[in-house]
Image (tube, rainbow, N blue to C red; front, side):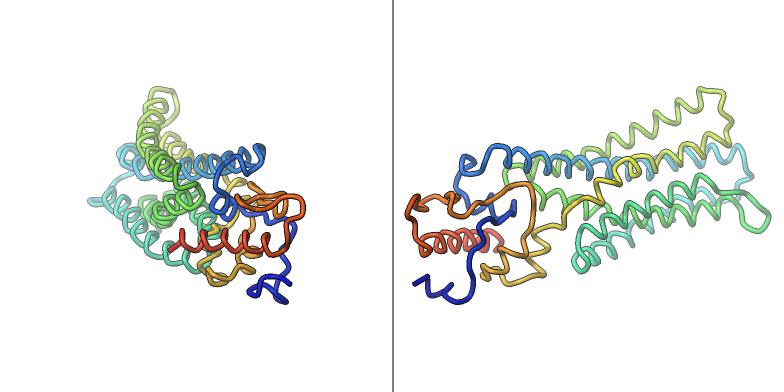
Length: 298
């Protein structure tokens, strides 16, 4: 007979593939196959890089506009407060983005909203670069609208970059990963200055200079867009919106991942018997692993 908690309810699958369960249930790295652990580490590093590039793009877009407005003043007549309106639009959009996207990420999931914020940033950057001055609506008004949209995406990136990076790394690497992502803000500020210096030192017209500077803000997002689409949903979010933490059946089937494999019966857990191990021992090992997951989440 099997363990009373499992009898007649659930037959453990031969293989549970979930990086979160594996790295909390096993007691040492040696219990995970070397190639699987390396794959998990690479996936976590790639996720950190993707979030960092997004943060770089955010900083670039917010910083470059200060120089763009000065160039614009040399090309188009500037009314009092026009430059301030453009900068304020981005900041107001950023505040709104943090509030709205943060709430949406807790409802719809990190992955969907993380993709949405990047799309808004790309659209806002390209829209800013293609503004056309007319008598009915000035280039400054158009730019303020596009910058508000861009700012909304940037605001959403702030909480999501930290959350996605934190939840996608192990406890030991979490602090370093988040610090690395936020350090890209300084890189974005420096890049904005370098881009303007290079453009102004060439024979490019002033009208083309500010457009190119705004358009470059979309490049980092476009380059990393495919990796955002390929990201898995955060397992912390899956557990929070899925079965209760004590539901071993739900934990085994709701937590999905392809980076680290936890093999049942090979044996994956410390203390699991080899050779003629019984179903009771295997089931007890799985229960112990899931209980450690639940305790770690509390």
